[in-house]
Amino acid sequence: MELDPRGQRFAATVTSVVLVVVLATGWGWLALAQAVVFAITAGDPRRGPYASIYRALLLPRLGPPVEREPAPPVRFAQLVGFSFMAVASVGYLSGVTTLGVVFTAFGLLAAFLNAAFGLCLGCEAYLAIRRMTARNV
Amino acid sequence: MDPVGIGAVVAVLVIGLAVGLWRRRVDGHLRPVSAQAPGSAAPRPDPSLTAPASGAVAADSAATVPAVVSEPAAFVADQREEPGVIEDSGTDPSAAGQRLDAALLEELGVGEAKATLLQFSSAFCAPCRAVRRVSSEVAAMVPGVQHVEVDAESHLDAVRALGIWRTPTLLVLDAEGRVSRRATGVPAKPQLIAALGEVL
Image (cartoon, rainbow over all chains, first blue to last red; front, side, top):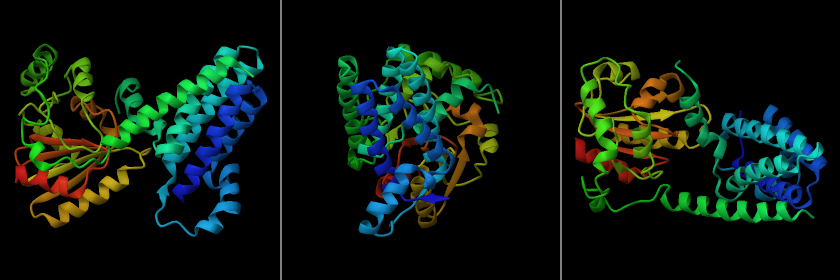
């Protein structure tokens, strides 16, 4: 499975905006909605809600992509995003706002770096996490 | 409106901008080859920081698995890395003029060659593909150069011994198995060819 990298950048941009709204308003249900979006996109990036918006509105104007990128890093990043927003929405909805703010802030950092610079924070951290946690292979 | 949340937004955007701009500046940045002359690119590390590491490597050269480099020293060395920039690897505990252990090279599938581009990749790594493309093109173009790509995750011992924290990391090895340069991120082709010119 290969993906249009511009679609991923678009999705990261929408995600960043959503997370800014979550932080500014403290709206727990929106945090939960973003967690669901992450979960769907992790399952199949092409079926992600933001990817659908991209295909419907932007792709026809932009034309087919020159280059495509592999899907596993994207899916992994979405999975990391899902874990963060799952914790954040539990925090917001159960009244532990600090938990919500902290985890949404980390999610926003990752989404913003992806949107603005094409940097995948979860992917970068993956090997570091593996070498610290795994005893051996 | 949540004032704490708005504060968090501002903080995250400032941090994100700083991190992103730093990465953009160093990633794939083409430093002039003259500045890459051995010993001139990076200042020598504080001996108190690296002495235990190089001692460990030296003492270990007779053993089969050179994975006893102390983690803190390896981490200190790695912080000096700039993505996409082929650096002198004098600060790398595995490579202070040391030959990599033959057993380690064999485990990684590095055969005999005048020079080797040893690439560490992982499954969740978008730029690994670009490094693979650049490296294999250079290996096809320059005689005597082989490109070996290994999955970092299935060689965590080697990853720890070599002080690798991120993928893609590319090591330039000479014929004796010494690391002469390393890069994280995607190095530019001319820079890579120049680095190979030093070891061939």
